[in-house]
Image 1 (cartoon, helix red, strand yellow):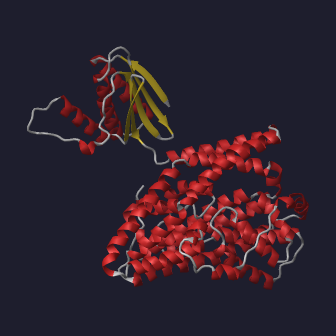
Image 2: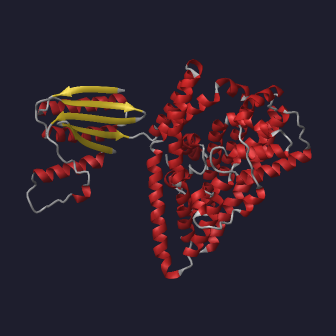
Image 3: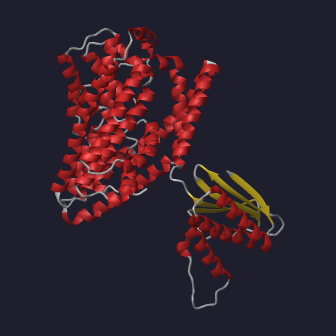
Length: 549
């Protein structure tokens, strides 16, 4: 909805303009309290503009209702003036008679006390004021969904009607670079954010037994949910039995696109101990970073008089990187559009359809895992999962588009603190641990696709092989990189152990971007669920915040 009108910069024009805003807000249907506040703040803003108007042009007012946000935009020609962006510098003198300057200061304070957001600018001799009266909690979700749907629509149209050469140029020089730059910048802050978050968390524990309680509960829950995820993946495959031998012909055509992958479980376990302080940051090695942060956190809390100083420094760095993450998240709709459009152009419609049965089985397993999470919140957390689901649903779309558990760490940590009321001592430890240890979505993916590809190539999987595969799946998932493509690397190792030709992984590489998005969504959901349950069990959850709308 958008309503626009012009008014004279006179007292009669002021009354008419205020009535216009009032009627527009009533038509939108906001509650009476918000309508009264909106009318009052609009009246003050209109009066502010008119008092600085040159009187040569009319006052323009536009009331917008878009994506749940309600804004009033006003503009008229006039001289530039200050709307006191920094109200901390305002000084009121009650000893003097109230003059024009004091009246303007009071007016500005009143404006900011009522408006959710108020912005002033002067350009080309025109003063503009934009007042946000109602800011929708779902506005960011709507924008992200809109960008996602637009990307899919445009991507399909280009795949069908545009020349392949044009699509390649568009993807190589526009879509992929934007997506890569955004992910790289987001990943840039992951290593320091994980390090400073864990150090700040652990150094704040006055009693190391509390640290062991939170860390032990988190790891125990992660291991339990991993076992459940493997069982769900195997169950989903034998329920639907996806995989057609006709798909094996597609491997030959795509084998040239695949890249060999090597993975050593022994090296993974050995390399968890860092041999260099800087190297884990340079390589974004999450296991090493966690070990390093735990050691530094424990040492910081034990060094006596210097502990308070170091804790303050670590907390400051943690807040800084959290703020950077918040800024980057604001650009996510653009990254979502480029990522989804690039995915459609790379895949091609036919390849996507040909393996849809495997993919549908995988999605069924993820849905089952989400049901398990809800049950855990009820049984272990002794809470209703409805507030959690309602609040985390928009965030699931955000982490879905990122497709990286590591890159989603700042999003999940911010959500735990601001929306769920989880204490920082819990989420600062549990969320980074989960980005490395909790790969439940990856477990389901490995089980479903390994068994389906074994069926495609006619490789039988006996009971003993199934148990071996389940154990290997758990180990691989815990060592899987928390970034796009990590699941494919693990799948190639699992296929080799099942004596399935490793070239079969090229089938999955085709839908790697889609898989990565769903895997990240499921894994991040599990991270936040575990953090919430552990906070509840250790009395570090603000139930009022958790249950709030």
